[in-house]
Image (cartoon, rainbow, N blue to C red):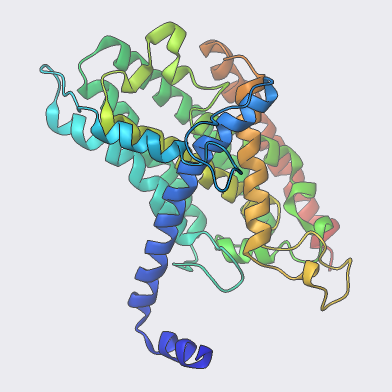
Length: 352
């Protein structure tokens, strides 16, 4: 039976198999977003000595509150979507989609395990970088189209912030390209094979820190969430949105968190490679690469996003700009030069 299924699968046209995996990844990301919201509320609750959501459903008395995300979705679906009379109604409607679609489309080139990637393209890193830059257009359009001063202030803050941190993130990825010698995400993972000592986390540590900070800023998460600074501009760029339109912005934010966590694991922690590679026997199951290692690394960084939110106060806007332009960008430029010297002198993993 298994052989029949495998043979049938292999006989299918490539576009059918790609479509199948696109649907699987899309559904998986949507469900992951739903349960990430629950996990965030649970984690922050535990950090603040609370229980978090624990009333909406359970599984045989375990995992109380497990159905809270579905209750939230039903509530948002039933709420009325109000479109301001003085707004640009067409742009107001498409802005959430412009924010959401890039967060899903970027998964096309992310290698999930050694043999699974929807589109194994050589310019995968450029594709990811371009799509993560496009999402801010939805934020700007949402703020401008609403014809609200608070929303417009939030949109302008977000535009300036994303531009600043996109440059730092791009320079950090230049270091990754120099180290791996390729733009293909699968080949970047394979370039880190050989154990933890070959992971780019070790040799590109300053760039890893810059990329992680820039990722938090790119997703407008605390402590860089001035685009939605409740205490200053009500709720920022999405203040005029309600119901499912607001939910799409919410979905995009969490989908971007999951994407940035996965990309951090791919670029700096070996993606689907095992941390025990080379330490155990060749046939030991813990040394085998696989999706489970990528998921574990992704889950760790995703939990860090929540840890930051529960720990750090929101930065002032001038502090955020100073950090992006005067600290992170110079750090990346200096380390790119250091990395070039190490590659030229064949130090560390580049030694022949």
